[in-house]
Image (cartoon, rainbow, N blue to C red; front, side, top):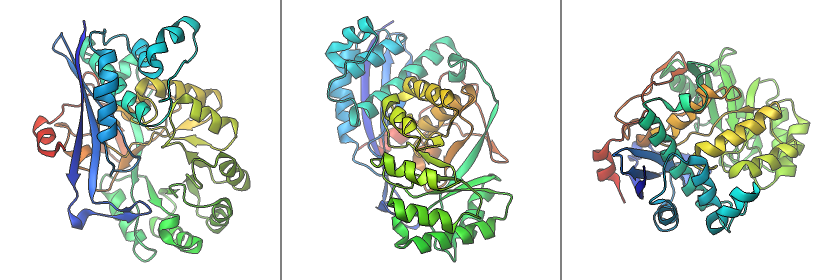
Length: 387
């Protein structure tokens, strides 16, 4: 069996004004993704997603270029079932034979950044192919299920203190979610405003709903610690990215100063970034994005790191149905992956790209038994929103 073609496509959906929201990323007017398609001479096609940004909006042309111009020539003619070897080939490039021979990495310049995002999309598509070839769902290839349903948390929460309670209650009502995440940080202007919004949210939700907060890395250490003191009686399940991902020492200082669990990792690449975060004792929950961190292959390495250090994994899944499916199958098979993010902002890539719908009942997501990722891509949607 051989790979006959690898193609990436930039999809962009213009968000209707009524459905747009504003955060520290500004007013989000588009939803973008890189769709990766890997074709084989057996007539089996796999799909994956690579990301140019952690949020919904981003210029995906560079990721498309890396897939089509750099990775495609490496992959065409290769056996798509040799997933681990192909990952090493894509990551190490012309020195991949050294990586295989000596058992360590020999990367080119693209050891972080958009090349790894491109690799992520291809790797996801290769696992999709393997599942379809064997007619089994992805979780079977990862060792089988350790759970049939996974707790999910609704991800949203941008309203002011007066309206945040109503917004979050409406959000969780969509599928009777038992957990919800809201945004705080620079978008609020002042730390006290973030504190007031969280306190209003907790009062409106009551004690029975788990509440997480995400600062998108926009506080400095002092502000993050002040925020923690101001919400210490709000029983937060985690405080996500209190400071910049570049400031690992600062994140460790925040973690040492509070009992609130610290979560981070949505913009990190490969196991090596996560090892640095773990070694610094900066985090309790790690949040790799399968479309950024290196695909499903690398997610397994990252999850093993988490398990060895008694940490849990909560994948960052703000993206398409392909990304969510990847996280869902990983959570089904990997014990340390205990919860999933379900994006509640306007997200046509999650809700319209796939012909199937994900089953969510009482805040729990059922794992599909369809082969591979279990996502049938709506080709008409792709044609309509291709850039």
